[in-house]
Length: 196
Image (cartoon, rainbow, N blue to C red; front, side, top):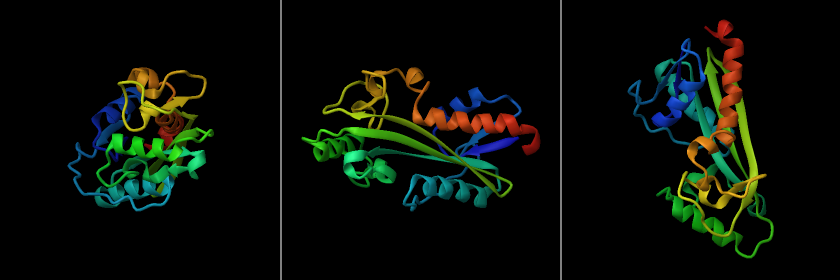
């Protein structure tokens, strides 16, 4: 069975490939020559993941899946959420986004937050959704050299290190994205004979 991951990120694609048996062929958007710009106009992570998956399916006919991820901060009415990548502007700059979060949280005692990833899988006009979540807290300054996005200011529950202080292999053991992907993989493995 061939599935397209609606991403140009080969590292993400390789991660999924390593977790599925060879009966599944996983291709990236680069692999299939898909270069269209997909506008993420949804107001939720669910909507954006559906928009991306549907756009690829409509254009190519491939069974596919897409993910969208956001940081949700309790004291900021769950911002930045769906706007996480462009919270400080369309330049999508990680440092600017972090500075905006820290500035808005300045002096606040409630630092509770969570990372959420939503995956939409489209197979033969059927839509399946999988979610992964990690709860934690936002600290007051950046720590760590690994990761990307908000990783330097997010400490997951039962940890003392930020995601940026963990090697990627360790973060991926229990990250929000890994949890969502694991649910999708379990579904695919359980249903592979029906889906092939």
